[in-house]
Image 1: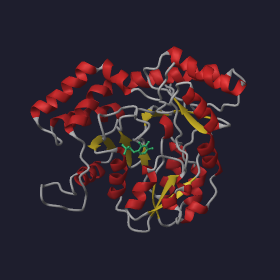
Image 2 (image 1 turned 90 degrees about the horizontal axis):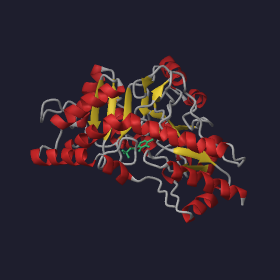
Image 3 (image 1 turned 180 degrees about the horizontal axis):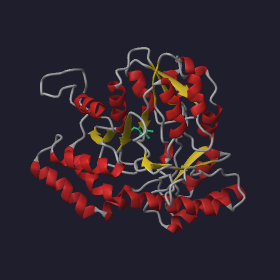
Length: 375
Ligand SMILES: *Cc1c(COP(=O)(O)O)cnc(C)c1O
């Protein structure tokens, strides 16, 4: 049996007529930059997230860059980030000539460790960037207490976590000064190319972000500050607006697949550490949307090769934490110890979890893993 890590064609087939109509509508209008399609999507996604402002941008990476630009970072300013995340989380800090300061992660959620954040704060700390990794919120209650005590703004990297509710039902992206999201095609809500979003509940911040998106101008050709071209395409907004109403249903399917994996693997008596959904506070909501379903296993690379030989696609998120990246070797915090992140990098493996997987496919993946450890 073949079980790819992700098959976007199945989702496309299920919405083909609506998606094709949206693409053709933009094509017929020949209006590609901002405009009505973007306005509509921004309104709908703001309502979905419960955020006052949602501003479409060119990618998740640019969302993070824009958010940090809005904080007016100076060269040498420090920004605290987890060492275990996608590269963009730290890359944007260096691009602004600021200094990424790494922290270790929580052993259960893989998210930034608030205690390590506390240890890494200095007089130069200008932002904290928690990542809601794999589709589960970071410990925002603890982080906001720390950040508020020091008056340090929080930028949420929610690239893998759109729609995740945290404890009292508020969605991620509403806790910090700015929430950042990615619509890279493989994310839970994926565009037909690159796209992203920033959210904020602060009117002044929203105006600043909107201006930075178009070279720091409010009135065309008059530039109050230096921004960039960070616009979302009208085409992407039209596609995303078709997909948005289906997001919660897709997340529920991911949770069903996760529950099935967990039931099958947990009872097998093999040395596999399963992901845990730790925030189950508000009613029926399980606060994990499984952008990735990541297990931790011994003999990880051997298992990955074996699964590939059996037709099963997997991926390692992430094999090299930031403190071990060549480009960050000279940073002071790269020489600190990050035992949890090092362990995660050596043992983690993401299994196929996308909504359209069949029960038969999930069972086949679980059985193949169990078979590998019983050999
Ligand atoms: C995908 C991702 C990004 C970057 O998003 P792009 O749209 O690919 O630029 C940033 N942070 C995290 C945690 C991501 O997973």
